[in-house]
Image (tube, rainbow, N blue to C red; front, side, top):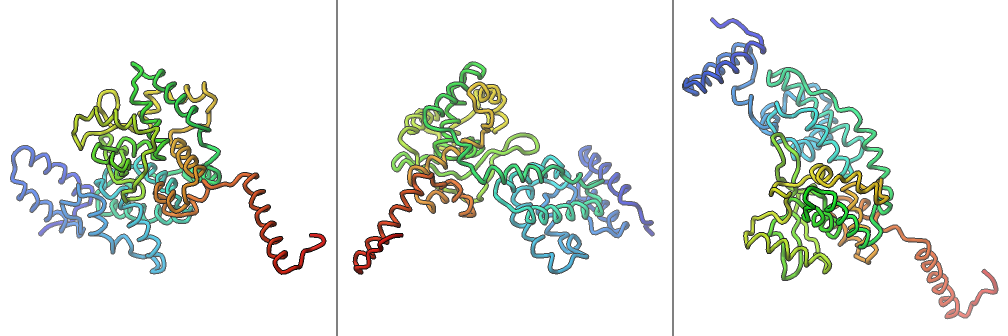
Length: 378
């Protein structure tokens, strides 16, 4: 008869048997042993749970994760799982869902415009999942609750109230910045300047610039298909879907076309070649760009102490809005889920408001003239 053992003992046996497999023991026999141990503890944990992705784990254990919750809470918690946790963290093994990975996901949710309550519900679901993983013996303890995201949310909220204020003033300011960053980099690598100009002209994120491949460029219609981005992951940088989870089309303006043509020529006809890489051919992230170009020092010397890499996207969207691009088209280019986010780039100035008032006045006067009732005073 089997005597119950603790989850810690089961975990130790799993590690021991894993080493045994590497030393030549039949994996099928090891799986049988682990299953017997799981049955002895009364745990539903199967050997394959130890390394399975978070998505698969949640699919197997969802009833236990939701146990004890009010049914009215299921909807927001499950929305948090399906729309945020699973897309951003679901590919990771449970043991690799660390505090750092969670923090990165939170900041991406903030950037996407999620409300405070949405993020709170999402985090509540995430920590229920991790607490269940502790019960199941996958991890010893749940990662610490991430602190400081509320202040980051406030900063993002303040920024989005007036993103136009974060934009570079004109083309000359953009090229001046690109040239200064090239000069500050090791061996004056031209590619860093190309990334800067591309990001501003297409209103894309640095990770999305890094994700561009030759096959994403349509030189007949001069369109860019933005379909992927480079993001940090355990073990290094990886490519994944964009923030909006869908591909979007962006016009390639004439000043950017010579740069694009030069970069395409460097790919030698390989459709899968990256258009933008580091000096050694590696992927680019905002942190890589910052460190390689001494971004903080350069921007301070140019008088742009506030400027961050993401502000290149604000620059592009502001310029497009000022150029008269229709709001719904700009929303598609930006990949914004909510029009309220796009609308912030269309702040009219005082002169435009004055012109609108004058036009309204002329309209009223014309209507009164037609009816013969010209007012003596307003």
